[in-house]
Image (tube, rainbow, N blue to C red; front, side, top):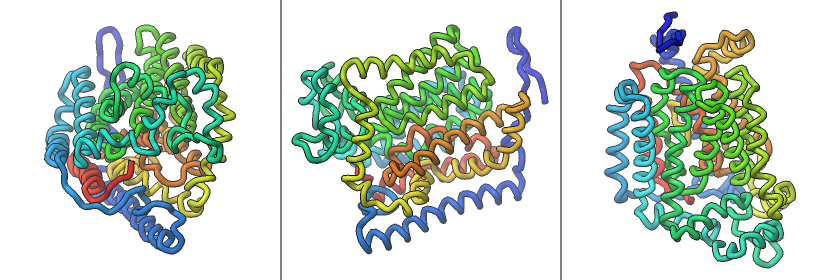
Length: 470
């Protein structure tokens, strides 16, 4: 252990956790974990095919993913390969050398380039402009929000299938904050699927930046830099560019990041920053019902920072959005209970819980990639020491990283067991999967480029062999 003097503040530097277990035994365990991930996906595919061919109850064409077999190349193919090669070859070195602010901007640009190039494999119209305009999507109802107040007051009347004019699946399946986002874009003159798609892609790319900001505040800059290439080259980018869930993930991630800055007193105005975190969390809850589970991540931040000081401003901010929507006439709880009924009227009522309760994690394996799986193996191995360190106040940066990762896994487990996440979790669970990616920072230097390549291969294969549906 060494001490670094920075300005007037001394900072303790813990030994690099990625240098532990770097020998053959550690590598074998990493590869075994990745192999277990591959096996899980293979079993989910095999069992899924049997069930789907037998009775069609899975309601997905390429289980466990909501996708169809469609081998193809597209205009985004060269760009996607080029981005992948650039990050694999130069990402680790650039992440270590760039000044911090330039690193954040570079990661945002790299993430957006990766997401956009993957989307453009389908072409501009099919891959970006059309995605949010299909019969299930938000842009189908823009004209029904000419009077926003009336639309909010009557929103719950159109959730359940039956009454005339029920909402499309995604509008009914989310609080109105999601739809209002695209209504706002339309009112601002940014009409159509192209602008809506780019909104989701550009903001979705910022989730990687938010994660880096949170990691630096809660762990240390070294671990954040090591995580950066893995956050940029995340396989879930396949779905970030094809749905609004990448946008939701970014809002949730910035809520966590702002709270991390406030809790560690890194921000100049911690109270205002915590208030901002609360506002974004409140908005997150009105973008997707399931994202109330982001509260687990926020709690983990406060535990990691060993403080409850930001809790007051956080709660005040978090209540502001619900109060505004309630005063406008939208009842979140009533809408959620109606959504449960709508969910069972559709695919949710036929998809077997006994399959999806474990196959959802096969989807997550594909979305997070094998490097994240190997990193999670290292996180799990350090969990007992991390919990002891957090209790005693001697937690290392790696311990606090483990806490964030375990909190994301807890949120996923709750979502999974609820029965309201059956299929499509490769898309829906992005706001939590983004917090699994930093676990790859614990992988040793000698293997990092290989693991980055594995991440890229997963995304490229999925995007070139399958039509992902959203």
